[in-house]
Image (cartoon, rainbow over all chains, first blue to last red; front, top):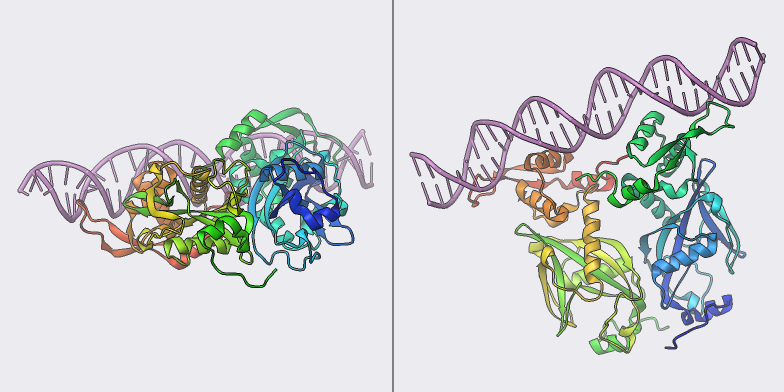
Length: 248
Length: 248
DNA sequence: ATTTCATTGTGTAGGATATACACAATAGTA
DNA sequence: TACTATTGTGTATATCCTACACAATGAAAT
């Protein structure tokens, strides 16, 4: 095994001899969530002349899988230091049925490891990769047909996010620096797929003791100006570590 | 690619040419939990002339990863139809440092997918595999040094189990058909690593509405004979599906 | 300038749930 | 027969969750 390999492959080389650079049979797919104008969004790629799919990639020979996910994320969004969490591996041999490539390395069976990312919408500049013609945000509620089992991967990611909301206030990573309580509530509601009581929501959020109420209000809206809040990063980090309730 | 391959390999063939039967770079490890005499147990293998490790194996070319885990479990415990859950993939390139094999297929880097299983102790007849000399239960609190990152894999499994206890009454799979409330409490306590109040525990368990109190008592103990309980499978299954509390 | 209206800010009462704690009953043992 | 560790059951309190009401406000409509 040579010590160093070419650090990049052409699309053609990838198809035929991806194993020069990457582990065989293993891929990574990222479900990248954002939040904008009251809607939960997910970042999708469109293959040249083909279907939509999740941004994904492969694992280099001497690279950790976590790092692969980070790298893919960086390539697609330009973002570093993102909240990124592995949530499930998808290992059905039929998961890629209908694959377009019948030959070469790329035609192999791939087990894919799913990660979801929470990013601040406004900071992202979507970038298609070499095999793609488009890279853009979609409303979670309105994603088109996706390739292979990518729809299921997305659904599982959302499900995981929804559950983790119970014990971890992960939404920090989706919100801008300053935000109003109604905006935060909208985010919870889209993730949970359920309306929440405005007053109880506020009480619950404040009880977490991770928010700071600012003096400013958000003006420009057509009604009473809501206060702005920001996260108290220290308290937020502590809450993330400890978990929220416990149950036992 | 030939359609059918030999369904088994000798240990030597596995070392040198495992890829005839298995996917490269991918393995499965199982953390098999049991409960006996008030202690949470985990099933470990000992390599011939080597360290202890988790029961694991590889993924056949046309087999789902879930099935691989099921197969490995069956081989080690003789059990079918077991509660088995994927919990994390471990993909650090350094995770197998100190590997004994320097050559051949087995020397490759492996990303491993962790599953944990909950089994009824009394039904298990531990069986070593071809590479192992021993297969036996260890107290979770007293497992020896394990190979590679297997200790961390076990810890992560336990952590996952502990958290899932909050929303799913998974212990069904660890208990015998009939059991007493103190026995059930002992199980919760060992999983959680924490003492619980006897009276509140009972109330909480009964409130789940998944237990049936039997007329019989467990005799033979040195004190007041406790009642026996069993799970109401229907209600239990419903509780497993729905989750327990919700939070939101 | 005044009214309108959707929205925000804040509080309270009631119910459900969790926690802390006490005493009687009992099966084997001394 | 008394003793002891354990089990069965209940209650009072605090805490949390849920449902709901009313005043304040800022832009838009009149």
